[in-house]
Length: 502
Image (cartoon, rainbow, N blue to C red; front, side):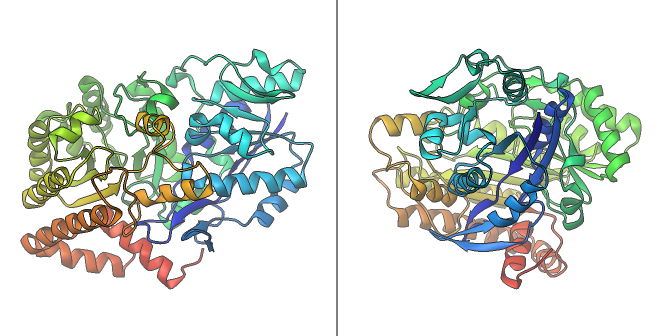
């Protein structure tokens, strides 16, 4: 089959803390799997090909990436049999659906397949809302997509393909779930099919820019079941990790092919096994590599004791993200966030002491929260600022498709219709000024007040106690560099205001 894989444009709130994009690792894996199975694969990365092309869109959002006309012009050059569309974030769904509809109108003979976290969470709804789609891949995509291609190529019925929801003459049909893959058996991402040089040239990465940065995946899944997270519905709770030597071989290849100096781990939970991370750090030291690596998505703190943190620092990790989510024990229990704040605080204290840049992720506005819980989170963040933590972001809780909280709120009739306005509203998670209350005890304005005040108080304490950080912030933003997440966000905002172009 002649296969084209598309990353559609991204959608951001106009008041988002960042609107820059990063390399699509998932799409690169799918492309590699299709090619390894003997199919002719090409990719269109609408974001990577035009990362600074921003167009105002409806509902206070901005569209980042190629226009629909530009996408269709590129597709016409390849004459695909099958088009696969990746939809990772639910706030991108209206744009993705609009793009898919236009593509189907231009190429009605093409079979259109979609996958990603949003599609995995709501496959039947995606088929209902987008008549252009023929098949939805649910969960881990590589083996399922290849099986779909094989069935189409040989005229076999889709009913025999596990892990999909597809359109039939009488409605939609869901097949059996597909077992999880062994992540170490996947072919390496097909970066040659994507505009990776554009990301490297402009320093567009998931984490803090510390040189030429390439994405990396050491593990998949997460063994925990936080109720605000869609991971269990996408990946199940099975956590699988690659052998350290396999990861080392990929790092060496990325250094040689792309001149990579820094590596962003896209893993949901990189550190689960303490022995694995110690072996990984030792392997870098043994090779004498002078590289940087980071886990911008955050990781669990249980294994981050003094020995592990020291090993991480020696091996090149300078930026670590913790995710306490809340300073309220009641909230942590309610969302099934099995974390001990005292233990995490001790880990953070040592990370700061050895010179790591530490960021904390928190959430406000969860369904059962009260103002008392928000005060507890504010107090914890203030305490961490005094401790020397450099960065924080307080997200607004959004009922995300695929999460347990989304399911329960939907069952209880506490969600609005799942229309474009709803999906665009999910961008509030990164908006600095827009919050959506999910708790009957809190208003939108109250959540915004606590979020903004918490961050202002945090950074106010940070800069008063460590004025050198404020001077570095001003210098780096002026020079379009970043050493912290705050600097990354401000550099991105500066680019938006000045209309930076590729």
